[in-house]
Length: 209
View 1 (tube, rainbow, N blue to C red):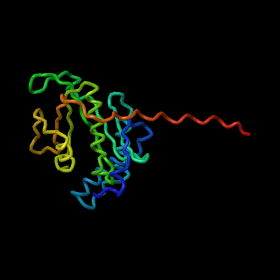
View 2 (cartoon, one colour):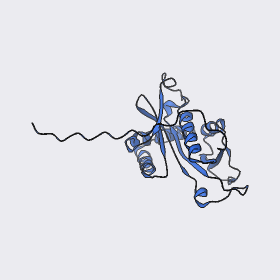
View 3 (cartoon, rainbow, N blue to C red):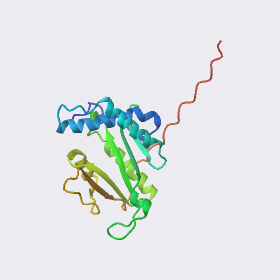
View 4 (tube, rainbow, N blue to C red):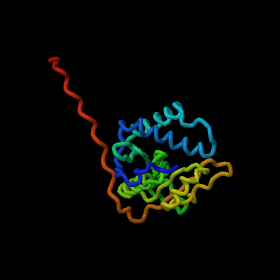
């Protein structure tokens, strides 16, 4: 999909996501999934109210969790991408990897970009913001699951250094591929994401005059 004419050069801002971003995040998530699935199954009704409601509920749970930070990217005040992550279950249990070492691991749970902004740097900006946060938090390894047939996403993560997780060999009928990223190198040279915007203060009650 070709991006809109000015989206590649418009100022991009990455910040913490809030409840106020929920409708926009859910809509772009449903739209991104629909665009991918339509490429494989033309004419299938993927971007429907039921799908949007499903991802609205899913992101509501993410935004309510204290252990799952969420970020969003916006251009000209419009949310065009979102990401969330959380400590991997193996980290909570203190499990070692195949080398016998327990490595603090983070899972990139979601990273989605509105289809009109694909190829304009939104995904990379969100990824860079996640990397900075992971380095600051002391994680040494990251993992994610990507749909096996989503070659666009797999190519994106491959360019950023992600590789098939040697600890998770996919089954012959697997629908997803687990990728891993080593975080022991230096943090990326980019500004950290901005904090969430505070909510608008309530208006004072009318005096009736």
